[in-house]
Amino acid sequence: MEILVVVLVVGLLVVSLLVYTLKSLLVVSSPNEVVILSGSENQVEGRTVGYRSIRGGRAVRIPLLESVDRMDLSNIAVEIWVKGAYSKGGIPLNVNGVAHVKLPGEEPRLSNAVERFLGRSREDIASVARETLEGNVRGVLAQLTPEEANQDKEAFVSKLLDEAEHDMLRMGLILDTLKIQNVTDDANYLNSIGRIRGAKVRMSASVVEATTQAEAAEQKSDNWAKSEIAKLDADLAIAHQETDRRIKDAQSRREAMIAESRGVVLAQIAQARAEIERQKARAVQVERQLEADVIQPEDAERRRMEEEARGDAAKIIELGRAEAQALHSLVEQFQKAGPHAREVLALQQTMPLLSHIVGAQHPVRIQKLSFLPATSGDSSLARQAIATSEQIRAVTGVDLADVAARLGGGPGRTVPPPAALPAPSRPLPSAPPPPRTTPPTAQTRTPSPAKQTT
View 1 (cartoon, helix red, strand yellow):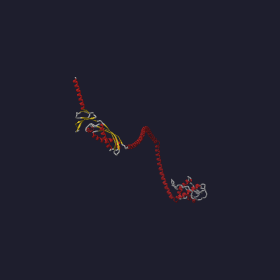
View 2 (tube, one colour):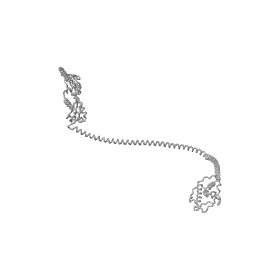
View 3 (cartoon, helix red, strand yellow):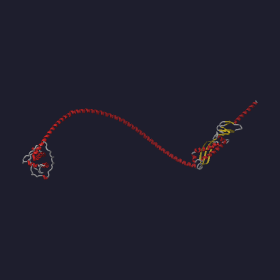
View 4 (cartoon, one colour):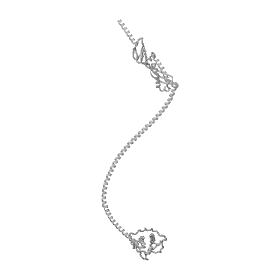
């Protein structure tokens, strides 16, 4: 029994020793760290190094030949505070920022980190990274003006990352992020610029506000104008529709009126045609009646008048022939009468005129021819007789008083009538009766007061 107990105890001790030995020799690495087994040579990317690394795995350490070191791969926050860094233009600036760095987990950067930071604490690593970044910040600020560094922090950080990343890689660090929090200066240069820009911003804001208000007012006016135009367009459209409706109504009424007027006109045309036919028939009837009542009697009358005209023409022809013969005989008798033919012919032509003047329509028997004074009671008749005698003597050259003296045989003797000579059927043309004027005083004779006896 005692031997069994001793064997069990010894076995437990051996097992415990084996477990402890295995535990001390077995190295396990978590994902956020790198285990460096130093002491054995190893080939890394074509070069020989005196360590081997394990990340997120396990390995067995060679006792007495290899030592184990661990490097944390988690981020290290580094606060950057740069004071009095001169910018472009000689203005000192104060820069405050935060960076996050870490150790690399892959080759070849891991070799640089192992060489520089193996066995060092995170504070030492952060201090090295801070000093490096502050130097980079000063170098970048020397290339930027205060306005650029303060306004465009992204461009500032971009240039800083470009310059710091190269240094970090050479040291075996990885710069994850870099943020510039504040950029200030002790000379209040940025504050002055800020006030100036604030004033400009306020002015711009005022301008923008005024512009916005003006645009709003303009937009309001445009909206009002558009609404009014829309109302006018709507009213115009309504007016157009009303006009179209009225036009259509007028056209409908026009067509109806045209149809009605056409019907009336057609009825009137038909009535007129019927009236024309009736009038034609009446005209034919009237023409026949006219022919029976007027034309035929007129034709008969015309034929009768033609016959009468032919008879009258024959009579006139015969009368003309007789007058021609009478004139021929008158000329022969005038030539045979000798010197007294002219006076007899003149007296023959004068006696009808004298009978017309004194109003007698029968032969006149003259016993005595006297000239009466103007104071006589029958002065108008005496003046007419004297004027007639003088005018006959002036026109024909025949003195009625001398003719009467030669032809008369004394008182009571009758003047032979003009029929002693063959008188023509028509009287010879005579001069128109002279105007009734009082003869001149020089040619007036003063006869004794007596009465004319006929």
